[in-house]
Amino acid sequence: MDVYQPLPPIQGQRLTFISSKPFVPTLIETCLPHIPKTTYSTRVENQQLQLFNPPKQSADKVAREAKKARRKKAQEKKRECVMGKRKAMELGVWEFDKRLAKWEIFWPVHRMWETYMADVMGFALRPEHLPAKERIEASVKAGVGAIQAKLLKADFHGCIVTVKDCKNASRIGGEGIVVHETSNTFKVVTREDELKVYPKQGTVFSFSLPLFAPSPHSRESDPRISFDLYGNQFRYRAGERAGKKFKPKETIEL
Image 1 (tube, one colour):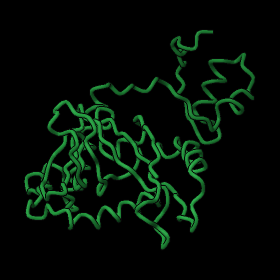
Image 2 (cartoon, one colour):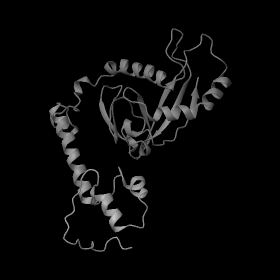
Image 3 (cartoon, rainbow, N blue to C red):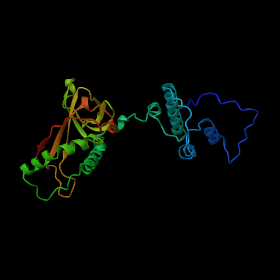
Image 4 (tube, one colour):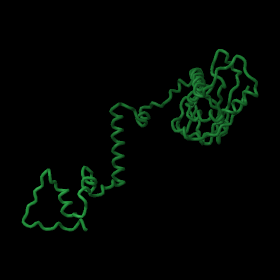
């Protein structure tokens, strides 16, 4: 039976629908008499029927809504007095006072960085009597993978970096404490109390870490592990480096 055909004419009768005889079941019984009466109570009653397909949102509308949400979020930050990157640059927040470019000032920062890295890496305290060199080298090589993964997420402010290789030969051998890291540069303070900026692109840096956390038994002659940092693969901010890879080369210095 065609359910979409016009309803049969009603011969001079006016239909009256009451709560005991609602419209839908009455219509089904009248137009579809071959369907059992239980069909309405089991399949239709108290069910939500979708009479037409809902319209799909266009790609332009979705993009407009996303843009509106971003604008709203930016306005909320502005109301909360959160300073953005552009505003910080305009106010000179990242400008470094060259009068503070003193190795003595940032040496304690480097010592704090070593303590921070020992905590990040989970290095143990230095034992009173060091094990044999072969045992130290074996333990380091076994844990290089874990060290590399943690280094990727570490903060390098306070690290002493040395330029090992560079397209600009005049920069090779340069050394300094990192006072500001950006996506493409290391800003360092040298031993000569100078502020220099080393680009990461085309440059290979090296830095070292003590193998033991600071302790009363620590000495300057304690073994250290050295890494080569390839600037081309490290041109990211600290928060963006978690999923990146960089190639370490470890050596043991006793």
